[in-house]
Image (cartoon, rainbow, N blue to C red):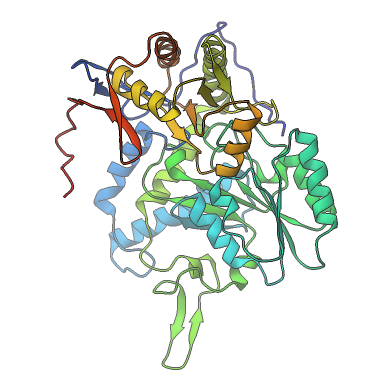
Amino acid sequence: MTLAIPNPTRTAGAVPAVPPVVGSRLLVPLVDGTRVPYANLDHAASAPCLEAVRDAVDELLPWYASVHRGAGFASQVSTRVLEQSRDGLRRFVGAHRTDAVVFTRNTTDSLNLLARAVPRGTSVVLFDTEHHAALLPWRGPRVHRLRTPARADDAVRALDQALAECAVGPRLVVLTAASNVTGELWPVAELAAVARRHGARVALDAAQLAPHRPVDMGALDVDWVALSGHKLYAPFGAGALIGRADWLRAAEPYLAGGGATASVTERAVTWSSGVERHEAGSPNVVGPHALAVACETITRHGWAAVVEHERVLLARLRAGLATVPGLRSLDLFGADRVGVVSFTVDGLDSGLVAAALSAEHGIGVRDGLFCAHIATDRLLRRAGSHEKRAVRASIGLGTTAEHVDRLVAALRSLVADGPAVDYHLVDGRWAPVVDPRPLPPFVREVR
């Protein structure tokens, strides 16, 4: 997938300014009793809130009210905000003005909704490299899972062959745009071209791509895009499914309830004909507004600075990790990638590495199989690692060069000297045996 990004004038190695995020000056406690600025290198799981999004939510909250059926002026304002958010999402992904925008909780919710809407007898083809959100919703004898390819062109050939062998009837190809394990970009446009030759539609999981690179449904030639606000600097509980409306209009409602109905009598229910048939219940007005504002903020700021910020830091991160003895990076194709790197360190349990980075250095990373168990397990074996899980460091708008350098220095220290304090397993997770770090006062003990 080739994405044309303007190259701004810059000083070599400089990190360009990007939209600010909430929590950029957060101090976190360490086990030695000191506090350090939090190095959030876990953006691939959930990104912090943009300051512009927080401000937009604060502006909306006094006007928050019921939507669509409320006669009050605040209800009219909230209804307009919800509907204008749909337009904002269409613009952000280059959708057609007639495309549906269904607001959901997240990408998982969006793809489950689409799975419920595919016509009976549809053949579905996808790679087992997918995140569980895209891998698991599809069931039945017409679901074809292709093995993790070794190269991008292998993926194109495998999809071509699988579609040629599909039974007669509707066909759907489910693709990821960027791997949440390695960050590598999939050849979406090339795979979509293969799908078109076989008369198939294409659904794109853009959860990891949308915060890092522009998404253009027309250029990629895909029918649906699913994305999540919590990864797109808008952590207010909203995601979206954007794309063709025909299958969605013809499907049974995703949820049954108020708002999804045109009429209800003792004998029959008539469901709404538009996207609202899949949005039963009182909608999350704040979440879609936050998501739309995040999309608008990034677009207005300019993708050139966002991409360059990430490019500089990713190069710094990968160069630094290459100096850590025994570190093995996971790679799919060796392709261009967004700011995600997963790795293991020989002789160190990945969960212990993550716990020590947090407790001793104030660094947040993710460890595990990243809700992509099949792909991560295969990539671990491909890398020659004996670890059962990996560590993932992911870059975003809140990342600085100091965060990257601190991670590399901490890993080198762990390899050379081991953890500075004793750790034990608590409910399957590593934690310091003695942990004096205080929680913030708004966090209470759960009993």
